[in-house]
Image: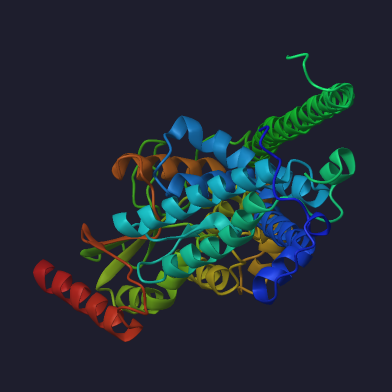
Length: 178
Length: 283
């Protein structure tokens, strides 16, 4: 990922236009900081529920009936740690755009997975936000689950667009602009 | 580079060139740092994945070791009065409630740790008891350790094996303890029944159950091999994909439906109707 250069921060472009655009230009780095924290908190929340019981998470993965059995356990075992690493990197502000891209891709995997459950009529409570398990038909909340993950796409997309932010390690290393 | 320009312009070109070189050097340094950051991110992510797989694999192995330790030295034996005679590892039989000569057979394959088994028990448990007590049907309870195998822990095994010990004391003790275990069932994620003391304390509420024999049976995991054999038996019967609760009235499967879609009263009425039909058919 070498394309980390992005828009110059506000102080290099003091052309203050009014309205939303002006607000975004002026506070972009602060907004990006908030987005970083939001996305990081989401990943921590996703991760913590799965750390405790490896078999339980592997079972949640298995219930999606997408991965072959040989990949179920490795994916189920690695998943919470991968999420944890993304959260950690976001808090540090290291490689923000790359991490945001990885976050968006992982969220996309979750969204596609949940939609495919609905399409195949498999009734489980999706383990994405914590722990999953079989539920009776009609008790699924796929629409809500998809909406929630789509909502989390917002900070990821913002950070891909404007990764430069306050209090980030990469800004300390590289200086402005990022 | 033409040389017909003024000397001033030449100097400027020189300055520009120097500035260009500095810019290029700065850009190269930035690129190097950016590559470094990208590399660091990749290393963190890959390490996290590797550590995750190792740590979780290890945890999973420990879970299984704990499970194997309970009743691990016991050889296979079945509780008193199971449906199979003789009970073997291949055909371990279910614990019978009701008169063995009752014509209609209700087979209940369940896991004391499974939340949907609790729902099924809440819907059909009392009806089963009613028909068994009236001598119209006998219930065969096959206890398995499904949740342990997939969610980790050993509550299905310890809880189930100790419940099986109650069958040695008698049908009344077994069914009372059976009711009690489902009424007090912990959350699926909470492995409370994996603790033998918790299970024995619960058994203390059942009249004429606890005693030296029962406690030893529970602590030693006497019927742990019977639980595991029942899992293998059920897995074979269902073609490898075990789900609980799995209920049959004279061989016809009863599917537990979501009470939000099919009201509890409706499901209970259907269940009674199926039992009555089976009773009528058997004459």
